[in-house]
Image 1 (cartoon, protein in one colour):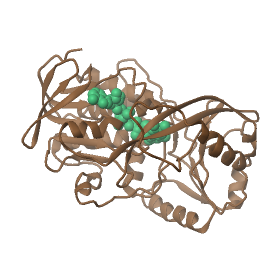
Image 2 (image 1 turned 45 degrees about the vertical axis):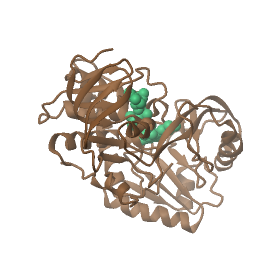
Image 3 (image 1 turned 120 degrees about the horizontal axis):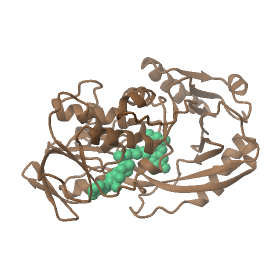
Image 4 (image 1 turned 180 degrees about the vertical axis):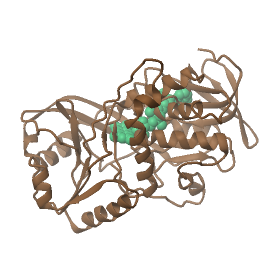
Length: 397
Ligand SMILES: Cc1cc2nc3c(=O)[nH]c(=O)nc-3n(C[C@H](O)[C@H](O)[C@H](O)COP(=O)(O)OP(=O)(O)OC[C@H]3O[C@@H](n4cnc5c(N)ncnc54)[C@H](O)[C@@H]3O)c2cc1C
């Protein structure tokens, strides 16, 4: 599919949720007058993290700026229809605002929950710490053995339709003049300290003023095409949908055992996964599901934590890739320090879906004004990579 022009002010490489959010916030910003091309290699999005995600949003981070980015995400999702409506189209995103429930089974874990809680409260998040008695009252399906503390959000956290969010951004952006083509960027052409154009698999070379790298787990490969480096690599995450003979009833949130295994309702079923103990870089085309993770870790852990899960049957499973930032589990956002018109949005480490509204808005501000106008996202900048100065996020699932 050919682009209609040979030159654009902004070329966005990768048109899933982060690329489409960036396109949306550029298109809806009255101060931005430029042209935008989104190049996406696969319009089915079948291997994008966006489509394979567990589609959830939380305010319970250790880092204040991550709390604030997700708070904006929640606000955007709550007003989704108004934000992305096109004519009489009324898109649905199905926000289930059931919260996350983090659990601790020792003093160290409790201390982390308390410390994070203080940060979250400072940001205005509606989060509550629960002692074992309070946990027992709220969650009658929960085995309290060994638990010393829990933390949940009263509002603002939950899950929604990830592809719906992406399609909402994409459709609105296209309606407002952003062009999308289905093609793959195979070369990024530089003159000195600037990217001047990209070349696609179909043979088009298209000039740009700014290039945005929103290619997800391909982010490192795109950086290499421009002669640049980022500490980001693909890591496999397997998810399992199970049928439970005795459902837990209403009010169940995304519940995380102290050992990292988690579950949440998924319609009449439950979605389960874990933060794998053995977590190597994965081959870009390897989407095999790690069934042994379910048998050896997830099921034993969650059946102990929730006795009803002793009688479950896996009805679906898939694997997706996190774009994992090995420096500090946080996104790298904004310009390369030397190639200033190459903008990164890579390394989300498992929280990029919920961050897509905030990060897309931030990128649009950088492009339009040369700096952030709303949330100051500069701590996520590439400078920390150069300085080898981690900006750590502890609450990674
Ligand atoms: C199993 C799993 C569970 C997750 N759960 C959550 C969650 O609950 N909450 C949350 O916030 N986040 C979650 N995440 C993370 C989240 O899904 C991602 O951070 C987010 O979707 C990243 O969006 P993206 O647009 O940057 O990347 P992607 O969705 O991966 O999209 C990148 C796009 O770039 C395209 N592309 C790549 N290379 C090229 C090229 N050369 N030319 C053109 N196009 C190219 C790809 O085709 C793809 O469509 C999860 C991820 C996984 C895998």
